[in-house]
Structure formats: C-alpha cells, structure tokens
Amino acid sequence: MPTQPSKQIETIPNPREDRDYEVAMECPEFTCVCPKTGQPDFATIRIRYVPGPRCIELLSLKLYLWSFREEGAFHEDVVNRILDDLVAACSPKYMSVTGDFNVRGGIHTVVTAEHGTAPGDSGQDPGGG
Image (cartoon, rainbow, N blue to C red; front, side):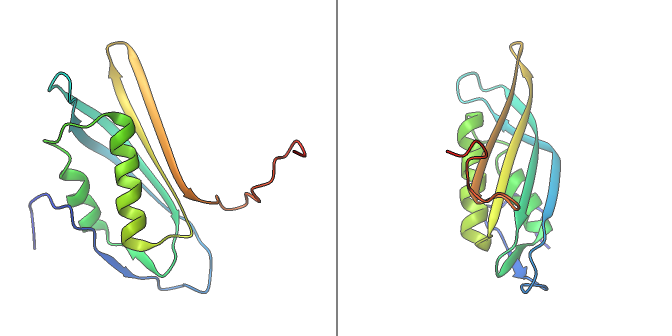
C-alpha cells in the first residue's frame, strides 16, 4: 500500500449509476506552499459531487491532496487544479471544490470552483432573465 504522495487519482465504479446522489468530502489538513514567500498555507478542502460512471477512491484522494504539501501554489490555482484533475478522473455530473484557507496576512480566502450544473439548479436566472 503506498504511503507516499501521488498525483494519481484512482476511481471505483459507481455502485448506483442509475440514481443521482451527492458525495461530500472534507479534508481539513490540506497544505501547500505560498509561491511568493515559501511559507506553508493551510486549508480545508471541501469536495461535493454527483457521480457519473466512476467514484473517487478515498485513499488515492488523500495521497493526491498530500502531493501539494511541498508544492508552491496560489489558492485560486490549486483549487482549480484539484477540480480539473478530479473531473478528469471520474467524469462527474456535477462537482464543486472549495478551498477554505486559514488567515494569512489578515486575509481569509475561500475559493470555489465548479463543474457542471448543481443539483436542483435549472440554470435559469431566478429573476426571470
């Protein structure tokens, strides 16, 4: 069993592909490095998705997120890269990745990136536009 960081995301077959359901995961120990200062950045990564044909295997997700620990990344970039990599791995009907980063320099940053249409969202403007 690997115990080293890995960029490889493994998946498993969706056991209920005939039904839409949401999977929510929270990873409160995410770390990366500020590319400007070299200082560590800490965040909680929240992932929500409606599976398509494949689901994310949790150990590989842990090792994937661990792979950012020594990597310089801006908050906006790392959240979008995580989303892109997870979408490429499992082809979800919908996915949202939120990075809730600890305060640094007096600023609290939350970045959310989405793929697809959120469950229950018709894509229509509720104001009629």
